[in-house]
Image (cartoon, rainbow, N blue to C red; front, side, top):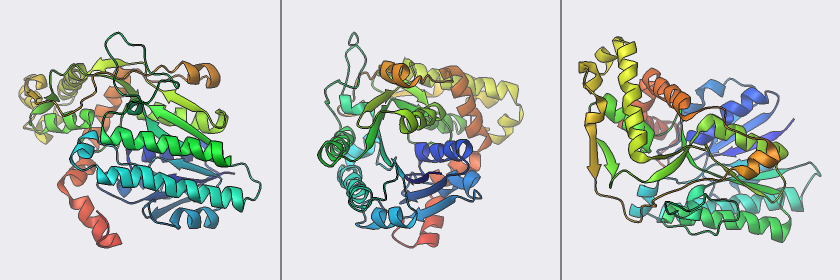
Length: 369
């Protein structure tokens, strides 16, 4: 039986990972550590709260000694590190918290793992898995080959730079101290429980409310898209079978422009309204409620500074070494995602209108944000 400490486990990818791990490994203990900032939501963990091995701790990975204490108390053998500030636009406006959380916070976790596992170690098999991003590699030109695990780092935003720094720290703790680590760098995720500031959920909720669908620049920036449940399966495979000290790129093998993605979202919203007449009453401001195309809401806005033109992941290593391939196509997974947001309106309304943050403050005190 493993004992996991999952940082950022109330966030988008972290919560989906917790759901997956509890289903796949019901005998394991899973402790979630999350600061419950704007993108962390306890409601995302509701499906697993009754699991006998589940525990939630409200806290910040930057707090000295906190991770160390939790690792001792819960006899943690596997630390899965999702906690991060992750929105590029926010990093441009306010980069400080990205450095503090993504760099200093990761360092606190590494120090805790070194202390508890290496200096005080019980001899149990342990692993520190660090979840990172393809944005550390920078931007690709139209004809450039996709990123591999040996692509030189060239981050172009404060967010990407902070994640690159954390990747280097994880590598350094392995090579200097012998800490057993693995790292995964993933492409753009989408799916249930994603905060509506990222492209797909933002387009969804704006479309349902009849608001403009803002597309940066010409909309031709290219990303590789990975369904979050496939990502969680890949992280599990790396943890259980990946070689210590190695990095694995995880992609969806789906390169599309932002404009193509937004148009596909609009098409699926239109299809959902045609299939379910009740949606027109629930979302009367959506153009689809009046049998008009939702894509009419697309609005081009000024491009953001330093906007990377193209990301693409070469996932050959994880396919070759670990036999991992995504289960979902983009079309099937997007349909599931649209269906989830339509079925879970109270969840995204609460996180967008601030009522959830007010509840967090009431439950945990004024320090929650």
